[in-house]
Length: 207
Image (cartoon, rainbow, N blue to C red; front, side, top):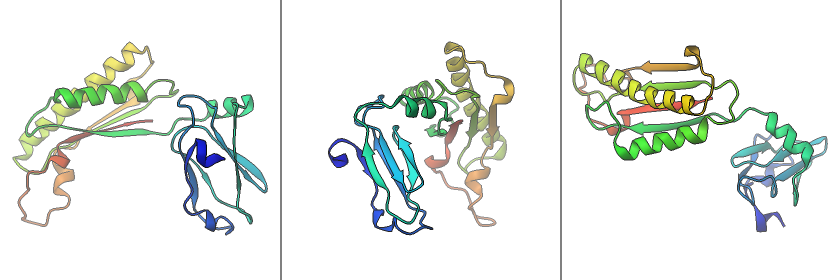
């Protein structure tokens, strides 16, 4: 039985008989991490979808509820097909102390782990680095701090791609030091900015 060996989200399966439903089934984790064994085939009236990686989804569509079949062994055809599909984008948020342009040891470790897990085996790698500050202080100071934060993260990205010998051109890394504009976007005219750790952040997206 599927429920005994894999973890899937399918709470809206009762809606699967509706042809226009936008409900989806999500594979939360394969039975054996890093292997195709334990993948799931979602069988429709007119075809099928194969899920073998965490967070992969299949739409619930058609006039009949789909059937689910777990693979006890990896199907070479499915493995080859899934290997050619692009990876889903990876994104995470890395936080800075007030006025600081360098990461704490804990956040630096998180960033390095994120990059190590995100950039491997990703043809056509593209990275976006968006650096922010909260809405306190002057614009001049926040511009400087956001640039420092962006450069801190950029340095880590460049180290990682160089160590992995991944060819990345200047057009493949987009660096945006947006200063305090994100934090101030929700303020009313004349309203003073408040200290908010949620905005002292660099958002890194890997495609």
